[in-house]
Amino acid sequence: KWFVSEGTRDYFKGVQEKNTAVYEEWQKTYAAWSEANPELAKELEAAIADDVMPAEEMIKAIPATEASAEATRVSGNKAIQEVAKLVPNYISGSADLHGSCRNYIEDGGNFGAGFDKSYAGKNLYFGIREHAMGSILNGIAYHGIFKASGSTFAVFVDYFRPTIRVAALAELGRVSYVLTHDSIGVGEDGPTHQPVETVSGLRVFPNLDVWRPSDAEETVASFVSSVTRKEGPTALIFSRQNMDQNDAVDYMERREGALKGAYIAKKETEDLDLIILATGSEVQHALKAAADLPGARVVSMPCMSVYERQSDDYKESVLPSSCTKRIAMEAGVSGLWYKYASKVVGVDRFGFSAPGDIVMSELGMTPENLSEQIASMN
Image (cartoon, rainbow, N blue to C red):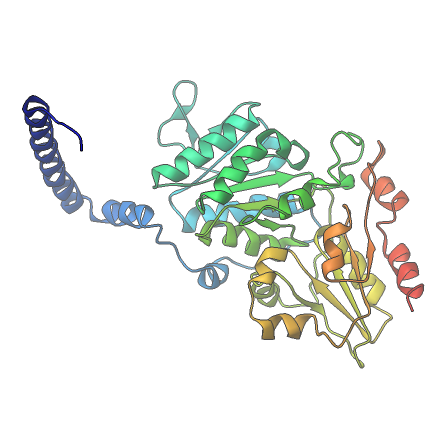
């Protein structure tokens, strides 16, 4: 038992009465403001409740990109503008890399005081402080009104890895990360800036969705998923290098398929005898390698964890257990892909400094090398 003096009881009784009075006065103020500003009140209440348009509807509300070959960081810049219109409580910032990561919300204003900033701004300048950025994003999520993303180069993710772990552990679905310059395709900056282990290192986090889209339409789907997911944070992995658009598949079919984590990017025209899995910039190589293989199916897998949450029937329809001849390709370490394929064309070493296309070619990230590897399979 604990002894609580009458004086202490009287003090806290007064505090309770005071707080009740303050709360009731605030409720009156808020009710009056809500009546005078019904649309703003509706927007605020939706933000607090995390009431957002479902992903399946949001992808339909965003026009087709009609993109030509481009980097997914460029595709992401277009996607974030559309998402910001549909999710008014979405804000984004960067660790001093807005110009490279391309996540600046146009006409959103800059957050802060002084210069051209105001506290109505939607673009945050975190400075070269990745760990602080991750911590601030978590704080924004805990506060419970805004959805927030922060950007930097993918290779710098280790600077704020502990904050990502907290976000995943605490199920902070309002948080996402825009991580660009996704692979050895970075090029001349060399191995210090070429992430090879980074994407897989993020994928092993429980409750973190890691997206590496292969074209502009998959990028739309990944961005939409990042602002509609409520169970945990999302990492968006975007490229510096250009990549082809898979226009042989309807844009909405690509978006809908991507929302399921993996889908058939090219269906076999004869009996299925080979499945080629790929993600990001390697999907274009898989499509080229499969062009003259009528029994080959190409599966684009932008997000492993989302695919794993699909029904057994859906997963079997994409990766039928009857087809065991499978090969995967990604410009990164190969380990995780052996869950889906018996052979993997990956990059299990650090890169080197040269133009991105040369690094990719020298380390086997080409359709020609993929075709050679397929030919070597029994």
